[in-house]
Image (cartoon, rainbow, N blue to C red; front, side, top):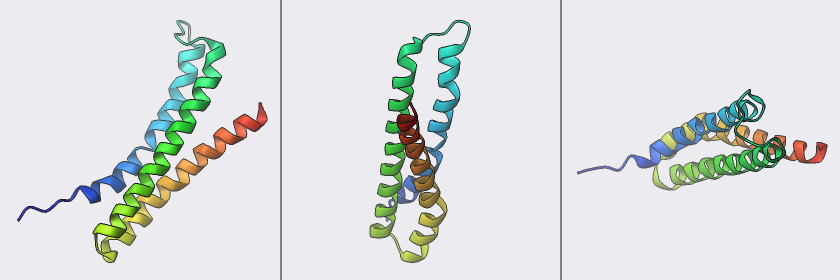
Length: 108
């Protein structure tokens, strides 16, 4: 009998996805302010805020989908530790990025 273990891979993927917004925040200033910059400076702010908001919402959706799949398709003994160690940090980081977007929008 072949078992489907895909529901267990979504939770670590949600946590590893949180590297993408950090890399986005790291590379955008280099694209705008480097010597041979490729992005126009006036569009950089709008693009970075929009990109960070989309990545934060995608992280929230991934973490929520992972926890839903774990709670509905696996045992509680396995689901709760995976949610605690993978989904909760993903939620917190996504909310942090979304909070940063809202602070940037209120600040400027």
